[in-house]
Length: 223
Image 1: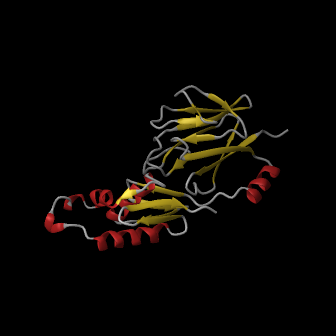
Image 2: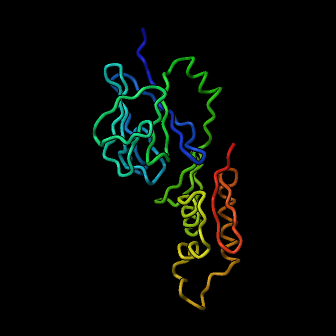
Image 3: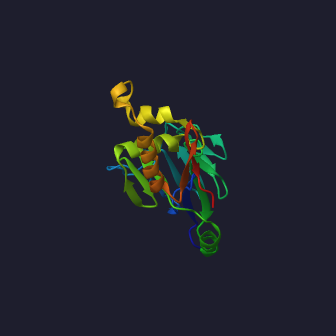
């Protein structure tokens, strides 16, 4: 009889992480954490809110467990926050979320039937994440470098998904050096040009909509 192996599949809200898969079997531990230049974790997540060593999943005695490693923004199983450094038993079908639902893991038993079901019925769209350190938008495994102003604008809208961001707030964040300078006022054309460039970067994944005389908000594109 073969050793049972669990397949850990990663996704996230707002079009989720691309199909990123790892495997856990008896005696193996899967360390999950933030991707960085010197990261040694097994499962790397391109999200600045993920802790360097966020949580780990391991199998012991034929049972699967998860343990939050004292992460800043937490780990939850079926919407119940884990107590840091206290292992919790998990099973296929459980919903595991990091940073208040922004990232989601799900588990299935790795056998031929499961692989067929996963490939035919589970549509996991490409990864979308932002890396503040590199000022980069990551879609799938493709990093897209943005200018400093484009990245600042994108980050502001992304972190306030579905919420209106006033034009003044965009100006204050993107052009702080020009705030309060009467001879250096940011023009409407500059703001519109910036938003046009950011829209091109996220085309197909997010939309950025304008609210006349007020500001902008970002929406996830639903399949």
